[in-house]
Amino acid sequence: MGDIRPPFDTNFVYSEVNADCYYYAWNSGSDRYEIAMVNTERIGKLIITKKIGPISEVIDYEDITGNYKFKEGSVDERNANLKAMKTIGRIPMEILKKRSQIQEFELKAEIPNSIMIGDAINIQTEIINRITSNLTVEMYVNISSMYYNDKIANEILNFKESIHLNEKGKQKINFTIAASDYLDKLVGHSTIRVQIFTSLNNVLNNRKIQNDINIEKPELRIEAKPVVSLGEKFNLNISLFNPLLIVVQNCKLNIESNHFGPKELNIQQIEALSKFNTSIPVIIRKPGIETFEANLNCEILTNIASQITVLVKGNSMSSSNIRPPMP
View 1 (cartoon, rainbow, N blue to C red):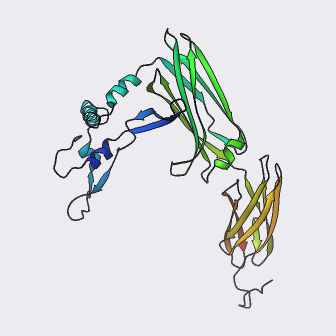
View 2 (view 1 turned 180 degrees about the vertical axis):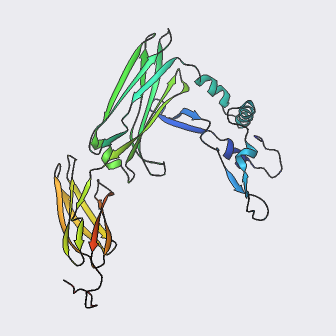
View 3 (view 1 turned 135 degrees about the vertical axis):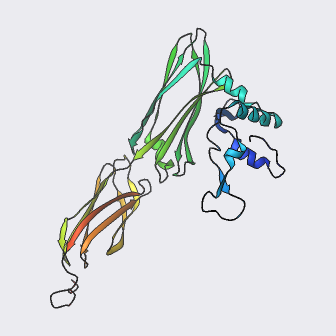
């Protein structure tokens, strides 16, 4: 455990369960990425594989993490990691961990959990000196849009700032991200991640704040009669308010249900701060609950969905055992 011993072990297996997660921030002064934080607990929590031998109906997996890694944070685990780091000539993690435990200053931040698309993102940070000496703290800020699988899609903002603090002093650093800075960076998931790291005297520490901001989209409204008769013509009324200060172009509206569509409407544009309306005639020829789903996709406003249910009453066959005529 926590070491390479049997002849069939590999460096890869050991690294996979014992690896640490490094966060990097761009340093414009040195013109390169620098380590901003190290997370020793993110990687290798549980890695399993099929046991050697025939398939078992009881326990058919091998716990690789349990076999190749001591308990996270234990003396044995840290010693194994120290040995590995020394072997490859890197700064031992134990040293970085001890450095990160020094509490010379405190980092605070107010980051919204959600905003309406088109609104500015206001972030407030504060660094407080907890000791009786002057400090110079480097603050790294990285803001990016994210894919649904937690991978970075597009970088929105990245900067570093030096904050000089008198003894027991504090300083606030506030910044705003305008809609024009992030609108063209969003992907389908519409999530923005804010990461703030700090370092002191060129020594990186564990003062890190991370928060994901959900970018809310305007409501796509669908209205219709809740109950209709079989073969009755009724309308689906669909509307959406564009909250952006810009015109939204090249939109496609898709509507379908159990027994309708799919139908696609091309919408050339929706004016800024304006409401879009459309009415779609529908006839359903089978009784039951009909669930209509609508999805709007534009160049900026993407994947806005809504649905409504309509009860269709009546028999699928007429009293003369003949289906109702087509309208």
